Amino acid sequence: MGEGKLPETLIEAIRYFSDLDVCTEFVAKMRWPEGPVCERCGGVEHSYLTTRRVWKCKGCKRQFSVKVGTIFEDSPLGLDKWLPAVWLIANSKNGISSYELGRALGVTQKSAWFMLLRIRLALQAGGFDKIDGIAEIDETFIGGKARNMHKAERARKITGTGGKDKTIVVGALERGGKVRATVAPDRTRATLHGYVQENVTPGATVYTDALDSYTGLERDYEHQTVDHAVQYVDGQVHCQRHRELLVAAQAWPARHLHRR
Ligand SMILES: [Zn+2]
Image (cartoon, rainbow, N blue to C red; front, side):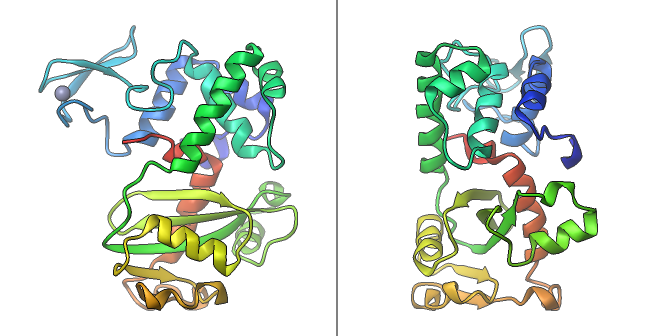
């Protein structure tokens, strides 16, 4: 799925996710970028039962759906409600009430309250193990008018200093692993250090840009900085790719919604 196809308004999100096959494929790609994995046995060979939208594992012979092991599990609400809900929460700067969510999705306030609770818990919990190898931490600005700009201009703005109408996204890329990203209130030292501590095991190697807020990480980490102006000089450092991943992740922050 190309970035350009992602819904940009609530109406688009609701329309886009009204198709359960689209929803299933969307969550499947998010959860299993390398292809579906059986929760029970870790098997990667399976057949897909189109009519029921479940996979049948060739290892343990059990069936699993894309909802298993996620916040969507055990909910009578379909992904056609959950995915626009996540979209709305991810894209509302000032928060959203269960009344607003209920009205927007055409579900009861009680259902909306339940969804909000689960989604917020998942966003807070992160659901990741800490990175203990090599971590790249990066922060970027998304939103505002950036989406409407020409591509080059947009890239420049996104990697620039941002503005008041932009959302700050901070993310961590595990070398050879997954990217995780979250919306951050600011880029202060307290916020960014807190983020690193939550996501990276002390002693691990952490690459960041030269932002002053990262200073001091070397006390607990093998801290390396990379200047984005001279990206790719050091073959080990590829924060630029990370930025691209972050942009994709922010377009869909539910990427890190599934829990272990
Ligand atoms: Zn299995």
